[in-house]
Length: 276
Image (cartoon, rainbow, N blue to C red; front, side, top):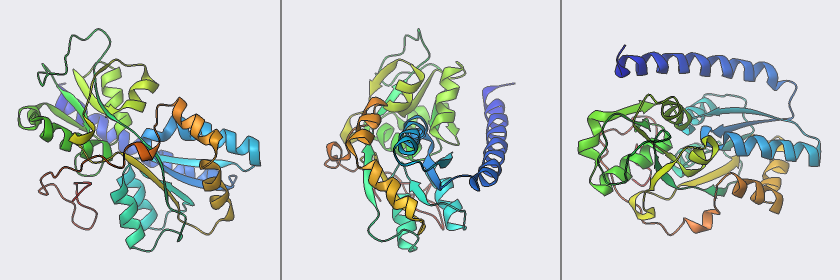
């Protein structure tokens, strides 16, 4: 089976797993004090943050991890979320425009950087030359993919790399392809590379893509949601985020936005360009 067919097969499997995980989330929700819908790239950090929050406050958190676009659509469709953590501002803006967010609850939690990774032992260099397939988040809905599209366009690599790109349903799936050695490289967040222990071939310049900022907000009137957001502002939370490779959002807010084509834009959802 070639990689394209395998990618389609893996995508189908991932969708089934995602559906099952969401159903399991709904079942387990009744025993949790708080439902947090969080971008897949925050999985490790948010899990540790929830444990610290429970130890400190006694309230339990149930997570639904997926791509920011998928989560935003679920919330808009009435999914029982209390807090939303997005990997880009556009999906949060979209929900805010629909008056889904609790007023005054939104703030930027953390920031990240975009990197090119490869399987251990790879001779790959950060020079635009790659012999093989490259895993990226889907350009149409996955924030990591949107940033990757901007960065590749800025670097002048996009046209040459397009036939080699393997679109993933979220950044952790792209990471998985690299971990399994099924692709020659992948474009993910620095935090993902750190979590997987994979070598970073190169870091895309900050000016090559829109600022990678993680906004967070309450999307229900659950009082525990506000308590959790207050906890995320504490020094303890900042230490945990830093441990997992995240940076303070203030370090990224001055990055230059770059424009990319709107041809892949979504119809009823935000444009595929985070800065458009």
